Amino acid sequence: MSIHSTALSAAFKRFSFHVLKSASLRQFVSQSRAISQRAQQQHIPLSSKTQTVQTLAPSAVSTKANISSSAKTLMSQDQITESLSKMDISPIYTSDKTGSDDKGEGTLDNPFKTPLQAMRHWGKEPFPTIYVDSKEEGEKFSVISQAQMKKITKIYQREASKAESKIKKEAEEAAKRAANLEESKSIVISEDPALPAASASKINGLSQYRGQRVKVYGWVHRLRRQGKNMMFVVLRDGTGYLQCILSDNLCKTYEALLLTTESSVRIFGTLKEVPEGKSAPGGHELDADYWEIVGRSPAGGVDNVLNVESNSDVMYQNRHLWIRGENMSKILKVRHATIKAFRDHYYDRDYVEVTPPTMVQCQVEGGSTLFKFDYFGEEAYLTQSSQLYLETCIPALGNVYCIAQSYRAESSHTRRHLSEFTHIEGELPFITFDQLLEALEDLVCDTAQRIMDSKYGQLVLDLHPEFKVPQRPFKRMDYREAIAYCKEHDIKKEDGTYFEFGDDIPEAPERKMTDMIGEPILLCRFPKAMKAFYMQPDLADPIVTESVDLLLPNVGEIIGGSMRIYDEKELYAGFKREGISPDNYYWYVDQRKYGTTPHGGYGLGLERYLMWLLNSNNVRETCLYPRTADRCKP
Image 1 (tube, rainbow, N blue to C red):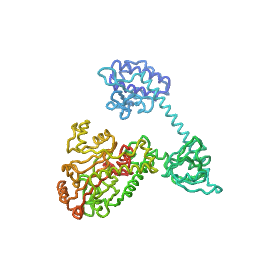
Image 2 (image 1 turned 180 degrees about the vertical axis):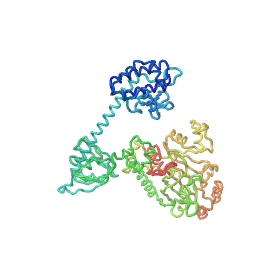
Image 3 (image 1 turned 45 degrees about the vertical axis):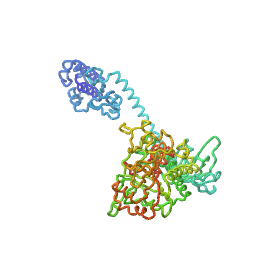
Image 4 (image 1 turned 120 degrees about the vertical axis):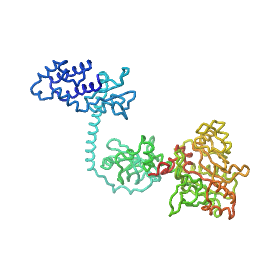
């Protein structure tokens, strides 16, 4: 028996029940089914219609002849079969072994996984022939058994019944909502002129107004309705959160029924301390007596765009909405506090802040990571670092620093790389390498302590409960010692070999080493060939430089620094070694001509510092709108 003759038989059955209604016609269909089954048993093609009917079913022909005159106008079996051949009667294939309910199409080459999905795909009873994995050797598919078909059909019917009930319920609720909305248009609220004038306040300044009438502006952060006569609104204004209670007509107006999260509102009411045993942000809540909508938000609010199931691409695409969340808000506030702490640190230590240009015509960290652009007919770049310009300022200002954007055109997709980042850089004259290391310890620890002592310290603990300001001095480790440590602790390169002198230790093994040691590390004296043209060679070991990377647990490198070459001839040798033309660096070379001096400096990545401070998993979480190799929007 061929698969298609079976399919035609099943389709013939389905079609007959649609067009034949009387008892005598159903009898004809029943006998026709018997004809098909007997034909299949004797391997007679169903297309041999006339012979099959005459040979196997004289009784069926007799039955057909006795059909009432009102039914004689219906099609003959030949006509029905011919019509069936023109219909879409393709069977549906399923395979528990190779099929997929998500990506399958129900075809022989791309089957569904389950018969239930086949029924869902068809959408209504009766169903076409459904094939499943055959249990016979050498046969791939076989028609689903009657018992299994009956069982799955019941499941499908229950699903369909539930879906129908859900649609009906949703329709009833929609009608009810429409009626409520229409009724709500007649409810109008207004501010009672007999009430005391309301004092305007930001949420973080409300404590002084307890027991008084106030007005507060903000965005609906959370919304909960309790029956028809009460609504709880958690308001957000950027300074904090406030729970507001709207009751009676205040929550029955047209605007109240349409209110969604992220709508902006103005709410008037009396500020009351929360009852004992209950809690609310700030320890108080606003008992509202009047409110107004300022700006509506779409139905469903921001939850229709971002929710717990959103993938990272959706979240970064909608970063402008994501930053309204509590965690992102905390991160950005801590970022603000961190920048202030750095500035306070520098101010108290007599550094002078300068603002170097970010459009430049010279490289600092290698030509391969430069963003190039046309500057009125000349080639220019976005700065990789402001270090060279800071060096020119120290003869005039002494210790200097800047907080500015830097850019690296690296096609890096690691968790700690950005194409644009906030660079905190400092330069110090008349110092030694050891003094530079001490300055780095002081910078990191003092800034962290300032943050923890500020009002934002609690936000740090909210995000990173285990954070503690590190103890000084930090562990010192030379590059050679790091290579030896990696060998001793079986930390290898990607190709499975051990690191050797001259190899760069990438992020993953560097972080593994740092996490194993479990404390801040000042990794010092890298080989000259690995570092930039301006780094001062170590006088005791000229093949290495007086350079340093500060490594912190969970992040790795957050600071890179060095003593700078202050001899003019050595500087030109550095240019030559790196293949850099000194022509655009005349102003930098002049620092070695006009009163040169030993000096050193560093650059700290703010986003990486925040990764460490907040125990963030990715540097993109610690900036406002991250710019990476694959994202430059929004």
